[in-house]
Image (cartoon, rainbow, N blue to C red; front, side, top):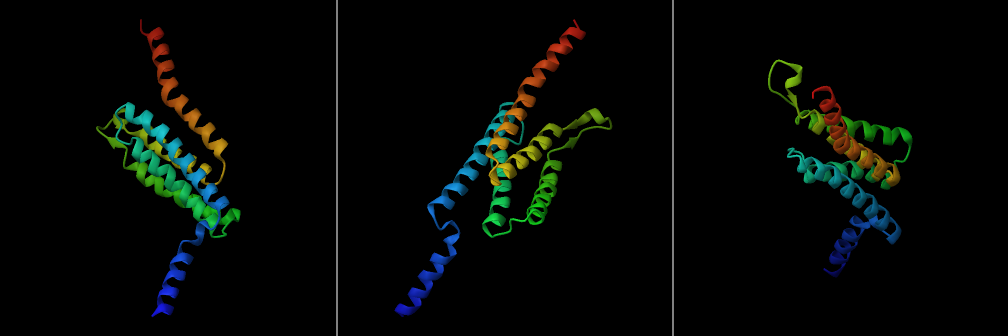
Length: 166
């Protein structure tokens, strides 16, 4: 009976061996935490504006995209072709999620709602991919640019609109 429990315990240890040293644990933790924080920043901005895709949605999308590129790297699939296929799948899958955020209320093209939310979800996935690949600086830069677009551009547009319509 002792031999059986020894086999069971060694099998369980082997199942949890993907983070087998402190370096790998730190690498994965940093990448996923960066993805969560950056996704959360974008989601916070959207939630503040009363949009349906808020903090939780953006965090989950960003963490998920990061994980989808982290796992193949851990499994040894590090060729550009392999990672390219993974990223193509992420882009397609997120496209479906974003499409669900778009609503058409009337016959006019101006009656579309949710395009910015869909684009934000798509960009959040790209930021997650960057974080998952270890490109944290690029992910942070992209997040800052996205926040500028979401926060500053509407203010600039309203200022320009006021000048045209006194």
